[in-house]
Length: 232
Image 1 (tube, helix red, strand yellow):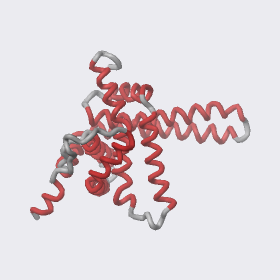
Image 2 (cartoon, one colour):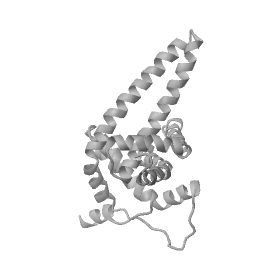
Image 3 (cartoon, helix red, strand yellow):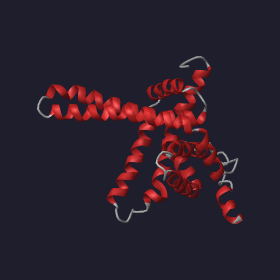
Image 4 (cartoon, one colour):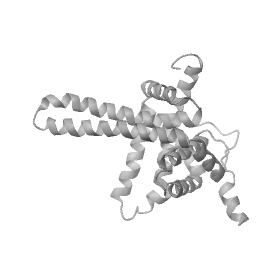
């Protein structure tokens, strides 16, 4: 069984120290090309640890923690790092799931209500539009909350404030990441049944990697500002 343990705990691939630094989509493609097999294994770990359902929030945070290591080009011992993060973020992830689920549920209810009214009265188009933007902002905040949480330990309220600030300062990279995630699942639907194994092999971990990649820069920026006394 030693070979199986080594398979899951070995370091991921690195990059030459003298390689030119890439940015944007080129960097995303480079990291994915280097870590794609680790990302597949991460997807499998996420599915296995989500079987109990109540473990899903912590599994999401653990997946984000490992994805952060990919983005920062740090050594990854996949199974050990994932399980450590699963235990470390259990409480905060549970709070995140409860609060964000409740808020997004209210947002969805508002959208449904105003949309039904707007079909007969166009005066409800304005509150419907506001509801759509608020829902998008909250969804982006939930993503940014995860990323900030796995980078640096702060209180829940401080992390919420920093998440909102990050979205206001640098929204576009995360918007692009969410569009990528949407395209990933759309491809699964359109290509079905050819794509039947996409969720089992890639969709969850690659989607989280994209979100962490898109939110990482803004997260580091607001954390630096908070250390300077801004946004804390």
